[in-house]
Image 1 (tube, helix red, strand yellow):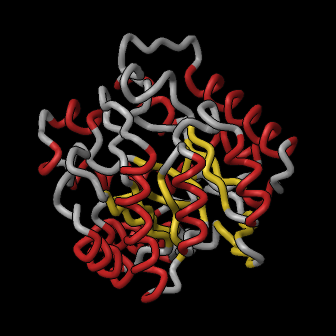
Image 2 (spheres, rainbow, N blue to C red):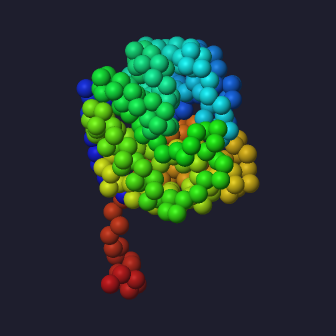
Image 3 (cartoon, rainbow, N blue to C red):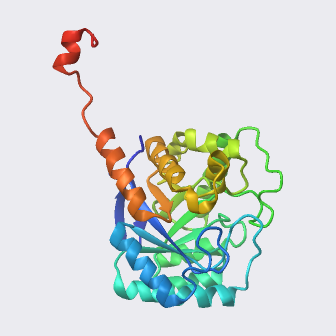
Length: 296
């Protein structure tokens, strides 16, 4: 099971690990792999985010640029115009934490000014280390994710000798870099980057070996929602991957994930509540087991 650790953001400390947190996905994009175009206008995206919050999301993750495999980046101005009105609209109506899914300094700065609390950078500052300075200045949370290459290139023949060890080493180095830029370790969350530059077997190994990241001492964010590795196992398109998402999410929390990033907050939350009730129940001997000689 996971460790309990402190996550600090904008002067507030949150103790993660006592229960599983959920991050609800709000994609303000025309081309995301599952819900692209569904919430492209700001009012629709805000309404969707509020619905996810009502269903139990602890964090709302706002993204204005698709990072599906093979996708191209968009200009910062366009991304900012998509993201900022949604962040501002949600901030006016909810006290849930808000993260902005971006690797661009201009977008992150505008989103933080509009009320976002966390920068969720899939490049782990490979594209712009100044994001760490911004996060330190604003006392914002920062999510460091492992990815090989860029979304455009990440699925072109990714290879690992030891995927769990390599991802762990990468994230350990990034935590040190964040500290060198003045960001407190308590502001950092780590993400192994399921589906980002990984083969099916790499994703499965990371999920099964997630506990190896616990030694880094930071909360673990896990994004498995409706991803292609589930589709490969089930031979199913994204709209038919909910059951696989729930299975992967539950295994993730057993292996040590603190936060699950999902599209389907209500369904995953229900599965998590049942899983945690079982995991937290006492497992002592029963009288009938002792009489039957099953317990020694």
